[in-house]
Length: 181
Image (cartoon, rainbow, N blue to C red):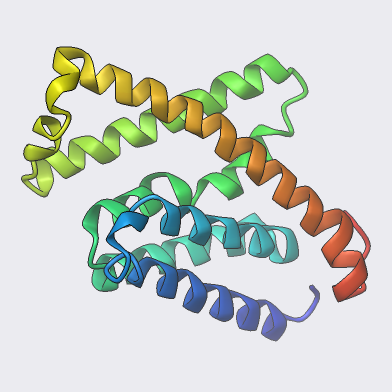
């Protein structure tokens, strides 16, 4: 994308769609993780078409709108702490040639973001009940949930890679008449 007006228009449309998805967490309460993940996927288009600086600016704008408009505060934190920036960050992490280091940094990024998000949920939003929701899992419930979260992270990262590839290699050349980068 060459023209600044095209970049602004794309960012505006993606911001509106991301904000709508985040707002819908109040309509579909079971979508606490799905809607932020879908909103994050939209960041891929902005990162590819406009670059990381525009994508991070969009991420900041959608994060602010999410704080104001998202009824589900856990979903809002999941977007702000992980799903909103990870599709952009993933571009940089995958440029690391040594794949084990790239994966290690991805895992550290995920775990750091999720742990901080839940610390904020528990102590800032005063929702300590979230720990008692695990009930019968016992005293290891937090570790079990983090392990399951890591397994789902690998699935999300793989899906994100596939979506990015389809967008860059198929959608852009066929529908936008732009060559793959």
